[in-house]
Length: 130
Image (tube, rainbow, N blue to C red):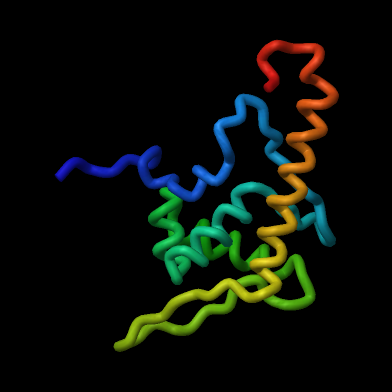
């Protein structure tokens, strides 16, 4: 069986359409905490995989890095975006809260609006912007 590479693991990123020009938005929130594409992709991967470790594997990142991003996400808002259950005989897991789902959905809506604005403003200036 061929070994998977990071490029094949990044299935979550497929949500960004085949647009040539797309923004990589970073939204600065309180205390210098930043919501960006990596954290949103991680939320989506946790929802898909049901665990932080599974999401980290899917995204090709270390568990520690994923855990630090989850911790930052949970400190950004008044309620947690991700809740975890401890491991053990029956295994642990992670779940995206309604807030986490709302955050990811809001970010994706903002991203779509930014894409429209980019095409409207820069499209007439460049043939590479569709």
